[in-house]
Image (cartoon, rainbow, N blue to C red; front, side, top):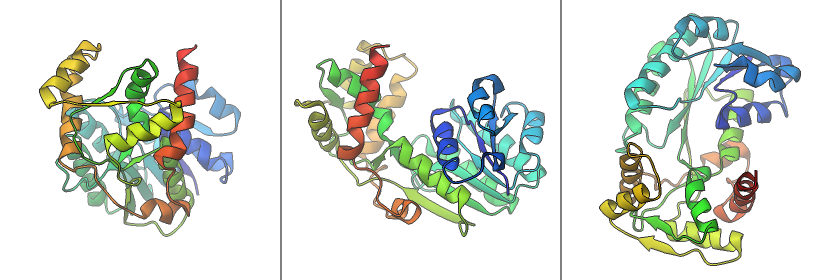
Length: 292
């Protein structure tokens, strides 16, 4: 049984591989990456590093050859590009005779109004159409997505939000990776959907947990969407990113990420780390990165 992780040098993929290495022999793990030279450390540990580019289907045929289980980590970019890339990966998995596909999706991908959801809905449908057993890992929101806010708080700025009292199922990237590794290394996950979310929390809750991690109060500034966009632009956020951030705030306000689920506990044998538990180490990482 050989397991492959795509995007294995990315932030999530790298953590999945590290977690797999805790229980799975390195020779049973393959890593698909666009630039193999960036994965030399994995190769040195015995991982089978393969070159695979979602924009080059031929490379995926070679990367996926002889693989039994695969984790397709969703790519970055605009929706059309991501749908095309994911379809290429799904098609290559089918051609390679892969026996199980896990995919990092988003909360309630089939019904969500989140602007990111169409990518994941289309990819889930493409995977189902292959007839290959699957598991959809519907990840809610990463605590690490808030690093910009954490950096601002470290500099004395408030957390700015237009999400109102909307709640988010924040969880750490480490826990999302551990859930994916549990599905890949375990059995009995065929044709499953896991709604992976932490305990729903508001921006006020996030700020309170961050305040305790920093040892000082982090205020919250509530604004409307237009003001939020203006503030983000003034903070140096690229023009094309500002509407995306505003859309996320709007989606949170509308309850799109307000998901209660026990699926993390099913896969990890425990709930995901809470904001209170996860933020201190994330803050420490942000501080360390800032001193480099």
